[in-house]
Length: 177
Image (cartoon, rainbow, N blue to C red; front, side, top):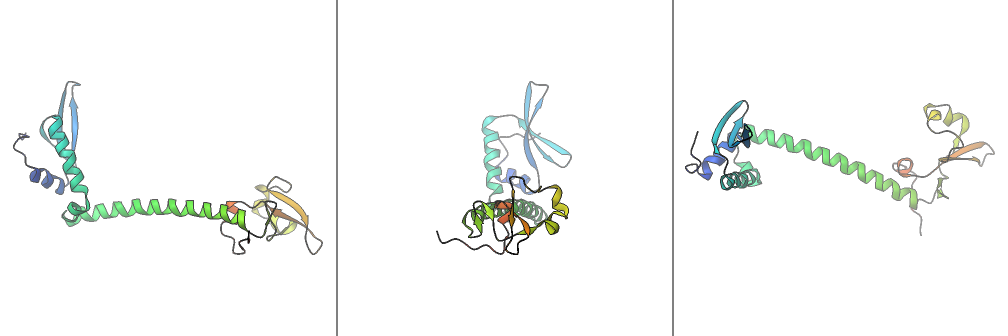
């Protein structure tokens, strides 16, 4: 075990560059130690000391900053980049999903085809629409649909304008008011 008073900041940063992670370890509910761990190997850094632990946390923050990450070995840099790319992709997907939802809400409210909360552009004839998969989900006469007579004099259905229905509509035209 190394003496924590003899360990410099550069040595601790060197351990971090080599892939060591620091943590606190409690033994027998009475003793607490600071250890470093890499894969299955553990090395003690001495008994827990608040000042020494704060110094390690500060150096971890500094190491994880962009400046220190560039100095990491290429293999460690690649794994951090891959992890960051996955995190950014997840965040991007969540952002796109949220933007689509809000865009759809805006379109449902401001479209010239939305009259009394129902879309008048897309008119579905009973045979065409309800003979498909959606007949089990969108039941005619529910609060989401309304029966009308189309311009050709045929019974047809219109559906409630909402964010999911209107979100990707190519016929959207913003109303002037």
